[in-house]
Image (cartoon, one colour):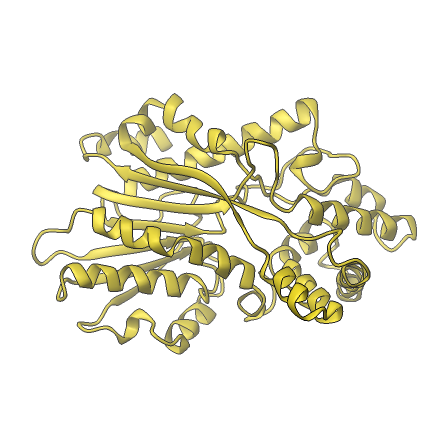
Length: 361
């Protein structure tokens, strides 16, 4: 997610999304089955990044657990890929006011360095699993071409079908891994970018603008034309129907989970709301461009720019400078619009745990 601390400093939108799930955390904790005496209640956050936002949500969950049973042993498992900056994560954990480290008795912090597309915790060990603004990422860079587009929303026909299939496989794999890790009576709360039944897609305007900037830089010879033509952000904004589909079609997942809630809701843009209050287009554009850079830069460097090229850094600066200038000139045209997909699932009994490793293999 870019330079140390950069994502944390420019993820106000992700924080706004997570805050919409705060009440759901309380509801999920209240519904979970508590472990037997002496056992540990483990909260897992999947795709934690460097934790500035997720730490607050995990801390809220642990506090809710302690309200049910004040002395219960508790642990927090922070999961992300091995290349994640876990040093920054634990620095944030220490620095965040009100983090669960301040609770008594002490809460054990844990790290899981694994993709959430595979098992990331021991079987049956998690009472509450959460994931905020992460599960929309695909497991691999799509091998399709979307002419004049950087996003799945611009794909048509067989290309759109291929992206939908990849997204469906990844989502089913994510759920399969969680079914292995969640204890009977546990809950899973996932929030990710979504698409409404009416076809409103999160980030469509933004990715259209990003594609046009890439196209202009390719026309000027600053970017490789082939790289621009091939690039697509590996994110898929699912509909509620797409989120529910594997829970209906897959016999294992149908047996492993019951559906508590699946819905898509709009989340206001905090940067745009601030601009509407103060009219400061320059500040709005700078904040917006930094927000976009926070979650796209690492992928752009790998798949649009040539990260091994010494000239890449100035090209990256130029790209985001153009985005900032474009937003400053017309603050609403390329506005980021978010419709958050929320999925809340309950884990059924553990009778089929022994079947899962062979199924995933």
